[in-house]
Length: 453
Image (cartoon, rainbow, N blue to C red):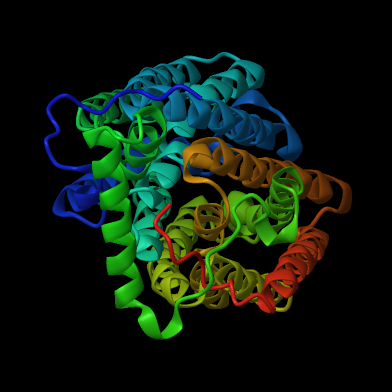
């Protein structure tokens, strides 16, 4: 797979960039890009009641724009991940900025639910997809000692977007209407993404080290520097974790399986966990409206849920650095199932606020754990495409769960069965991840690789 050359302005060796100050500044830029690029994922849930009323459609049809956006976001993540592997992040992010701006404006001017849905599909396919899977994969390749917390910070931008934008958009709907609010969102997010994309020219150091060692002759200074840098960084990382270093993982046989089979299982697990996750995230505003609490209270619960998800992702990142991606994902999935169960017996206003906060705390670390698992068990030069594939699966799960919950509501007249449906999908995720954990448990490899790449 062809790789873009290192930035001509970069003078530091690739190995010295790992866990560096430059990596920290890049992580901050990445966080801003995720907050702006993923805004549409949560804004559409807030405008769902207004859009349903204006276009005169059912709850399932009103949920279709979200479903289309999430499916396109997943498919787009597979493509943008591959493009980032080939050409670097800046071109992908710049194109994504144009798509986010255009998608919001187009949706704000739409005359039917189908045009509204197509506009969200554009935002997902090219816009939001550029600022999630490729950035998760890129972040994992800039860090070694604090890889888990770094990826968690990157992924928390998704939930910062969920905590930040819903109350702002709800206020905009009440003040100037949802259409004008969408146009303003497009301008703010699109321009902001374009400016931040200019700071993402540098390629990931692990990719540069891999290119240098594979492309240069063995006797050349470039090959020698890459090999020495990799060895030095590996020695530093090993010394820092000497008491509990796990054996090197055979990346050609992740979990003792063929890579395609391991990837497929992770994708199925991603679909399952996110069908369950979508039920509260997509329908909490509509659920509160049906209970008589109003859309504003639902938007507050969604914001609270995702704000707690930020805390969950950061804490899960710290946990992941200690116990590895597989066990972190298992823990999050089990707690998510508990959170879904709590929605069944309680439907009062205060209990719903509490359960929304708990649900956010329980499930926030699940999706970032997939990126860590890819980093631990698969080759780094394939990280963008593989993380893109798993994130595609999780977003298909979100899309399916959002639509399925609306359909179950239309059929049954309540969300009770939808919560039970989510719990069933969550059990499927637990089963798959439990089996993968069982396969690596005896190998002492669940803590992750001891090598940087």
